[in-house]
Image (cartoon, rainbow, N blue to C red; front, side, top):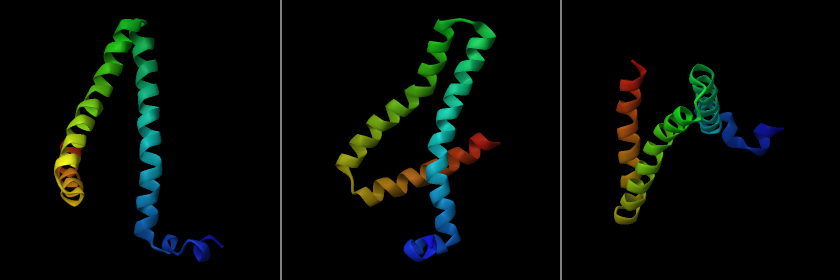
Length: 96
């Protein structure tokens, strides 16, 4: 039934991409909650928790601002390609 209605689901690579796009934000949210509980459990300090949460959120804020400026000044295809190319080596470096 679903494959007839959504023909793109017949492609395995698309299903994997869709699963990634749906599950990655959830995993990031769970990670934020898990780290929060770990910090509270180990230190019991709300100040330490706020420092850890700020350290987790700060890169997103900075890169969102830089990405917004880049998206305004350059073609969207170039911004998307450069973002994908820069994320891949960073992910490999962090995974080791």
